[in-house]
Image (cartoon, rainbow, N blue to C red; front, side, top):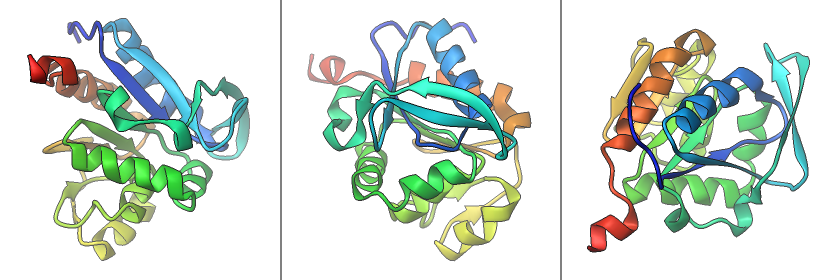
Length: 189
C-alpha cells in the first residue's frame, strides 16, 4: 500500500457499538499512507467499541459531530460496521444526510460488514453493486442493490467489504481509491 495521501482528510463516521477492528485497521492504513483521519459521531466525547459485537473493546475519541461536519472538508468517508453502530447512525437524520451527500459528491465512501445499512437508509444503494455481512444482504437487495459475495467490491465511488477477515483488501482498496482522487483545491486549479 505505497500511496501518498498527504493533505487528504478522511471522515470516519461511527457511533457506540462500532466494531473496533473495522475502525482501527482501515484508519491505521490511511494514517500510514499520510492521510488525516477524524472520527465523527452523533455525540461528542467518546464512543464505545465492541469486539465481535458483544464484548467491550475500549473507546475512541470523537473529533467532531456529524451534525456540524461538511462533506467539502473531507476527501473520503469510512463507515465501519458492528451491528449497533450503523443501527444508531441510520436513525440519525444528520448522519444519513451526511452519507447521502458524500455518496452524491462522487468522493470515495467505504463501508464494511453492517456499514452498508447506512447506505440503504441514505437511499444510495439502488443500482449499485455491493457486498456486506451475509445477514444484511437481503436488506441491500430489497433496497435495489446488486449484491455479490466478494472480499471487496468497488462500484464507482462505493467500496464495500463483508467482514473483518476482508480488512486487508478493504484497507488497500480505500487507500488506492483515495490516491486516485483529487482534492477540491486541485479540481479548481
